[in-house]
Image 1 (tube, rainbow, N blue to C red):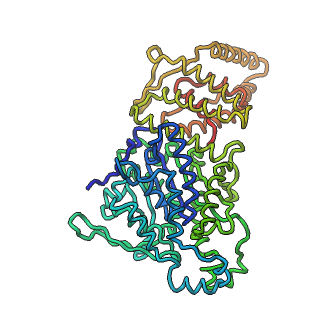
Image 2 (cartoon, one colour):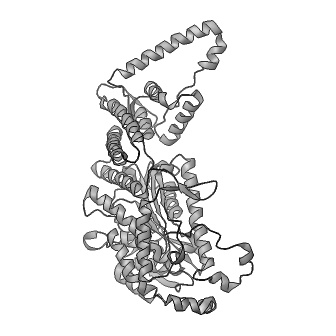
Image 3 (cartoon, rainbow, N blue to C red):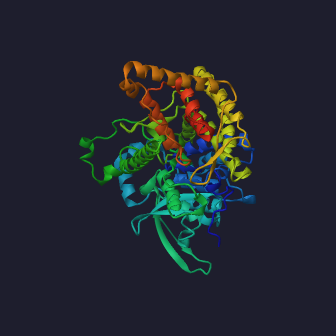
Length: 565
């Protein structure tokens, strides 16, 4: 039995990035991320053809509860070793099967019966028997096991017998074959939300039918409704253990992670409950309040928000916040917030929520308030995903073409993509368009002058050859002359005003050098250098051209012109 996923990607060590897709839990609200995924896959198909699938581009796909179901749909092999579902088919799967998994009630009659009867029923057993859920998942995933997925998957569950999270991960099955369960069993296990569906038990056996392990699972949302942090942790653990697939990536090198995290929607921020009201609640009221289940809402909302807060804090601290995108609608209200309302009208409304979410602005969590706020006034989620698709396309095809692609060639490719991005955005912000296009032109001139045969080369401590680079135009020479004039001016002022003038106005602070590894940390130090020197943004191009050359110059300028997702 193989213990490696049948990935269509080469290991991350051959590329620039570790790509991660994460999908939250949320019952019928799984329709929302299905709409987002359909859009992303369509963009990838525009770049790589109609047979492109998300599993071709992500090193890891993680999902909890309904997100676990989506994960297995995207990563389970079918005919010709291709995913059993295209992203566009997932939405239709939900529309077809949700009414049978969560049989709709007569809503008006249900509301007349009141909370008491609902609570009594909840105390007597789960709201649904789960039979159709089990049936359709088994029919869909058949006998496929965890080791057979087309890319690495991470699916959190919770084992109520041992009272601890149980993470089904492609990374763990090699050293722990007990976890190599059927995907159908894993998928059912992560979807059994307490109150709504009964817990699920199954066993794993070896080829001789010998019992390996017994599992008693409930919904993974109890432990990690937003599985993004779990997925990142699985990767960093592999790096720490020395997995050769990730060499030479460092576990804290978050600039090498590219993460897309999809939520299933959350309650619009409002004063829904307060301490005075809830102080009188017993078991019944915590389990039911109108059409809501406060206990479940509190746990899942808190879990989602804390994961998002933590991840963005880490990415920001390591100057890699552009590598993390969270798409979540936090304005849901009424029936839309329900986990199990499978009436056709509500399901269609959830499709509309997903479509409208694409048009909304990209948001980031405010680390002071904990609230999501628009991050970039001209960037919608749709625009961010288009750019994200281009990065995935570049990463995948860069890996396939050559394992050790020349760094300068990659920068030239990046410039071409950036140039096209800006053309797409120019109507939204023409001033920004012209400004950045000029920067791209400046960098292109310098890249175009590279001649590796004639240029001097120097070798860093890691043995990587860094080529030098000079501009072919007259701008560099003019700037050098200006630098010479400044030295003469310094001598003159020093003679007039004494050495103190030199110390104040001409004190030399060295430009930070790039060690060939931590580009984000180096760029941060360069920005601090400019700040200390009081160098205005309008003159930073001159300073950059004078102080940097080669790959260093290209890296800094490509970072400077990068438009945030």
